[in-house]
Image 1 (cartoon, rainbow, N blue to C red):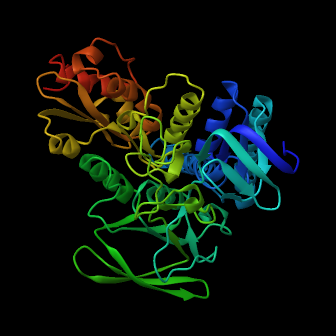
Image 2 (image 1 turned 45 degrees about the horizontal axis):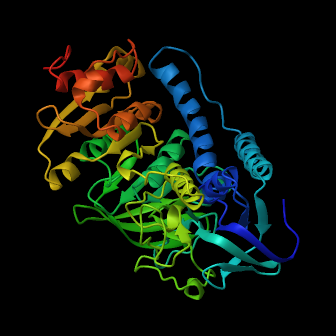
Length: 473
């Protein structure tokens, strides 16, 4: 609902209605606080309208296409994909987004959160002006949750057709026959995977020496192998030199890791080189706030996500590392801030126990430290890696992949779990609990995993680390 114009005072003002903002608002309202949520576009933010939800809907459609190909080529089921009805696919995606959007709005209304539509500007540490609507005052706190936008490379200007960002790639017209994807992080890999499933020739360019560079090196290796097996041209350690717009696409020059210059012509250039926090127009200085050199608003107290200005808190993509820029992390950040403001004891966010997922084919899912991170922090580690195809269900799926566990040497606590393969996004929850609860391999080895399942491979890795392995030495 939208409140009347005039001056309004509430306990909490939340600026930004994405996952971090609306989770803060909902939890604060449920704890009895009077909450105003300001959103200049639609509640739900990037995740719901341009990112997580629509992209995963499209990736599900891609999985169906891949399944038909597997049925024909591997299982002898004589099925083919005659064509993809782009309009029908888009309609289904948009229906899923619309129903989720209505659900968020209904939750906010039911909780009694007042929603103000418009752009917000800080006028002090407790006051906000919504242009053309009203002035607002917060008795307890202002929460900044304005999210992020795609970063662009110098000289590249998105036009929504030939050059697109991760925000508008899903809404570009039709399915291209060829795509050059810049950026081999989770977003770039997902888009490369989707377009390949839909029949496009895909070149994936990543400046770092491996794709998904923040993940464990073995994750990068297995994922690269899986993407190349699908026909994606993966170019790690490569850089875009320049790009020329054509009438029907883009011609780009790429410097490869070997120092060679390649020319890539594609219908579409998709830029997925990261995201930048959005603070333009907020007038942070009016509240005594500044950003760091990267544009983030850093908290002075991570236990409360409170800035150096008392009563101003930050959640979501405005936070610098160790925050992860993930929607599910921002939910937890919102809960923490709301409970802090209501005086309810709340543990700080354990970012090491927040799972990271790439929804490509194959998928990746990780939680905790990589092997390199664990060693760099001085841990003596025991590492066990097992291919998914070592268990029967992994053979059934036939996509390869692996399970890798990093633990303290001598049977100590589990520091990280890293998965690559089919459906690992649905398998990571167990490992999240293992890492979050400081479990040791012997603790996990006592629990029986169903046979035959993919998760059986997770159990087998822990059995081996605990000295009880059946299929590994």
